Image (tube, rainbow, N blue to C red; front, side, top):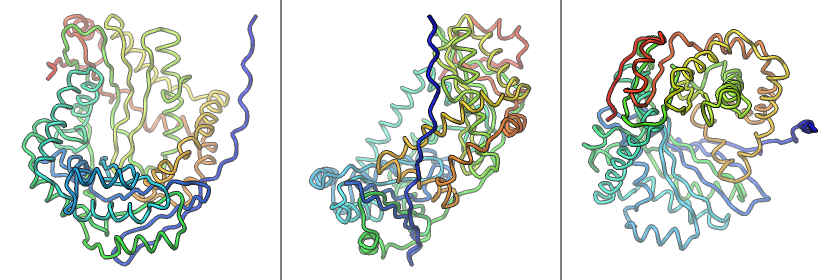
Length: 448
């Protein structure tokens, strides 16, 4: 007896919390999201110190500098810093991405002022200790070695280096390569901090148990006299290498092939952003997507196939991914490319599209369950200059995407003829079949 699954209910109403923003006299922009029903407060301080701002010869310095912020300040060595956070009961972290660096903490609302004092010390007077730098550098180099031993992470790294023209910042992992990280020293971190961490290129986001006037007074007390302009972000225009190419990274003995198929995507300001996100979800962003349905459910080639855009200030990659058994590698590549062609040739029907839209709308509130999640949601507004009503209108803008919008986005943004096909696998078992398949010029390169 077949039992029909119950229909999905209508998404529950949700409104993103109201917030305010203002710029202090020193240039620091402050975003406040009062949440009276919460006990915790999350504070994120962003500055324009992401990997895109690095000199290419110093690739990885943004990540190492950000990590150093939680290893001590001018007045607190690593042990004293750890003791202070433990005494205050606050969770402190720092990291960088392509477009920004972030330091912050989560604590009880009553500890906001103490937390801000520590955060201000981290940002303005980090210890930047040579021994801690060398420890983090060694960890980063070891992580690179581990990543290159993992076929999936190796495929991710090589895909970037092959899809972008040489010299493009995005043609590498944001945390740097062995060649660039290996020559870095603490003086580079100190120089990067001095030119990239400044109030004129920074945003402070506070979400949670706050009273706005009290929070503003604490901010003025701890960060009001911080000064400096900072360099601001670097602009560049990424370019792709060639057209359709097949690059096989040889890993003798591999029982699987890791596939990465794609090309340049869009930047965060692209007017087609919402149509692109819905299209990518329909193609390979949800469990019932076309890619997953075909390669996993119908053919059994993989545990999962996905695709996504990675929009940044400049166009990030559009990537399709899957891990398949070696024996079906070439057939799986054909299927992946076929699905890219299919989304261009076969627009979704309203029922298929509605299922994807309903999913995106339905899971929307889940990311805002914590104060840290709400603070993180303000970050793209700060970094990319999105409108203040962005989250208030997000659901409606997803719901407005129709079949014609998805088809137009697919025609504009999915380009199978230009796609790089990058795979890691055992060349002795798949090279000949790949060469005979006529999918594009084949290059076989050794794994590092």
